[in-house]
Amino acid sequence: MLPPRAKRLVTLLSRFPGVGEKTAQRYLLYLLSAEPDLAEQLGDEMLHLHERIRPCARCGNLAEAEPDVPPTCEVCADARRDASVLCVVAKVHDLAAIERAGTMRGRYFVLGRLLSPLEGVGPDDLPLPRLRSRIREDDVREVIVATPPSVDGEATALLLKRELESLGVSLTRIASGVPHGGDLEFADPITMSRALAGRQKLG
Image (cartoon, rainbow, N blue to C red; front, side, top):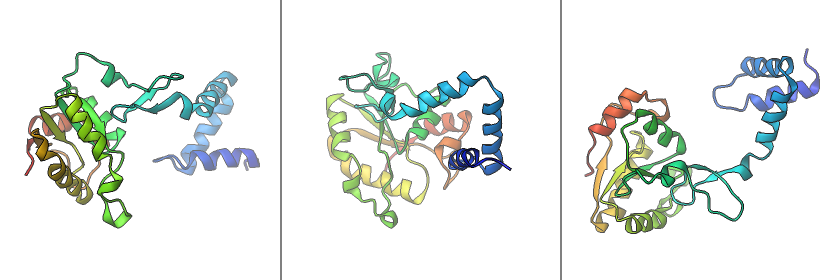
């Protein structure tokens, strides 16, 4: 039997994706058996998480925050990246999956969500004005639409086509290789690399 405070921590840890009660209990027991400074460091990072890590001001990726400075992620700060190629993804998880493939040398734009009428997410809920401004500012030539191959992902891809084609950019869609209805974050690097390499013109 665990004491009430330990049960509380197990309950909190169980709220993480993929972490059940047994795994959460193992984490708790490990932390209690490890050196105390591990729990202290973890606690400090968790306590200041939202002030130290914030969305990149340009693309929405994760970035370290500095006082009075707009957060800038490592991708946007990398001058070797091709700013004329912009890959649009739904979430940071998807960006990380594409980066693991190691073939994307452009930059990114994170929508934050997908078009989903059933969940009440319409076109006005997506950062389309900011995306259009980014395309103009960086003189983007190609926009890679890398939304997942689900109903909402396809609807979002069609919306992007409609909203961006007047800007004169080449719109491409990542190819098959990613399973239909699946999330990009679970794709292995080889599958993701093939999907990017075989992208096709949207529409």
